[in-house]
Image (cartoon, rainbow, N blue to C red; front, side):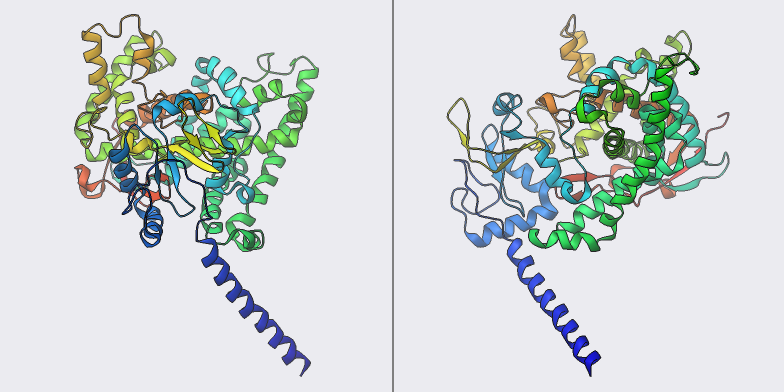
Length: 530
């Protein structure tokens, strides 16, 4: 009898929890009342006073049609601020004139990191950090030492391909290309971050890949619950419970390396092969760290989060590039010829930093692919934490999330003629024309605007201002070197040798994230003589 009563109480508690969960889920799905700036709302019946039903429908539509809604809003209200409805409330899209004014605003008033925490549910995934250690190191040490790190990166690319893309010489081998590229990028990025101590450590490489994967899956899962239930729900979401394991791995791997390096530094690096500190990101962080940043556990945590950022960004590009080249194979030989010419121009035949700059057609393809498939549909995202008045009197209410509709801008015909046409050599042709007209003479800035890793009003895939991705130049070189290795050593095609952009594996949209298709298969084989 006692057991029956206990079981009854248990079931009552379960049913009550389900009912409460349902009620609060419905309640939390309704965006909280927000204060609006004097700006129209796109994609509704009345841009000033939309009916509740239409507005709620538009908010839900954003989940699956963010691209269409952002493009429609940009076309309607280009040059002025406007709102796009979203499930968590309306987001304020701002024109370039406000970008310039807001890019240097105080971080406690115009908060960049808060949007990252919101996108990836940082409270539960631990993704995101307010530390300035890694951006400081990326801006200074990484970019200044770029030439030095490219040789070991290329060495790691070769080793990683042998493991993760062992296509045969004769037969076409089907490969889930996204998985292969993720593994390759994880190793290559780890080589830059911590040398072979990290790139050859399978436990570390697996942890960096799974941390990114579990973080993404966990963020999507926890968003389905009302806010006040999330602390409890997080304990039952497998992807989120694994996050602690990845942090534990980071501590096990990174801390001993730091201890060994600390001992070596005390001996003047006398036991080092070079007699100098390692030239990698991990050591640069140690050298630049101050205060709490000097704690080994802190550096281990930052290194794991950095690896997520590197993999998330750099692995998407080669996958998207391969999809495009499989659809447009007529450009492959042209790229191979350019690579050959760049090698011939190098005294050693290696693709050093200077030779990589000569791969202008490849850079153009990378930028055009990025134009059609940016990793984020909205960039320059910030949360305005207090009422903020701009110089022309436009007032943004506190708790407003702002951004720039990057993908919509990339389809503006006033910026890019025939924007719906995918032209791999678009930016190469623009540069050639500008050179012929003398517009690039003694004008490095104009030429730089056309580069894949550039950040400007017409190209904000990497963000803009002081929070623009500080590692984008390394990412650009890393992607180029991976593509060079692929082009020189492999033939590749879609199954059935299909061509044409109509057969391209479609990118997948999750809210404002735009990701390469993870299920797509590409067939590979080794090129003869390679």
